[in-house]
Length: 413
Image (cartoon, rainbow, N blue to C red):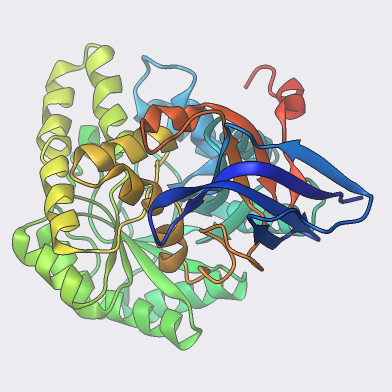
């Protein structure tokens, strides 16, 4: 049974003003933020009271690019190449992958303050089922926004080495595959329009264009007619130019984008999720494993990304924070600040701006009356030092506390 809560004398983050407002009382009732007041709240019994003195309340973080079924690879096998670990996970039975996904979501919520995850691809519609398990409260967990399976060309990214995508070719083939994914009630459609880092050892390269303009346009048309958005795995300019012209909504990674492409993104309202923390670790894993030749090839793709992100920030592109498989939300937010965002802007990339990309800013992303009570209570000010985002005291999911008791279920993961 859900309890109503009052957090007293807390400093809460105002996403619009980009500052903390001090000594406020927050009433949480029936999963919503019911009241925010400087004055004493007139409440009856039955409320649990939380002393927020010297504490900082922020919106629950939104991870805009995650693969829950393999997120634990960021914590274990720290010296093993990503391409081996990811392939092993995707070859497991769905029951095993679902167990990993649930536990990984729990750990991300407790350790990183993540209350919403855009699950950016898993085979066999696993992340749609994960969304529904949490949504129906069969098991408690963060809000999942699901792409369903990744859609790639035959022999495209995440089909060689890692068995993790649906293959589709030609306009009719792409249309049918998008319709199949939407039939399973995916929230977004995800296409791979370039190669990626996990396939470099097999001759794939992030600059390689996958899909034609006509195929991407067909996918976008199918999705938009069902009022769904399209995100693309895209690391280089030629494919980005084609995908933007085809009408895509959000571009992921973008390591090798030119200034022309950044201008096109701004002009066409294409949002951007760089996933810097996850991508850098793909390079770091290969380097640490002694695979210097392969690491050098990956480095050529990874290291230019910060400059691209800096230019995107200056251009005013709407940017969301995401980790991919190996990254960390707190590291990602810090890296956005390193690229030129203020600490508050970087926090908003995991909050209100991420919610805008998802079209759910009326529900989550900021601390306002009537919004969902997805909140994180910190013991120190994150605007003074983004490292303070790790100083989590409590996480609240839809008004309910989600605490370290779940750690007992993490053994071996």
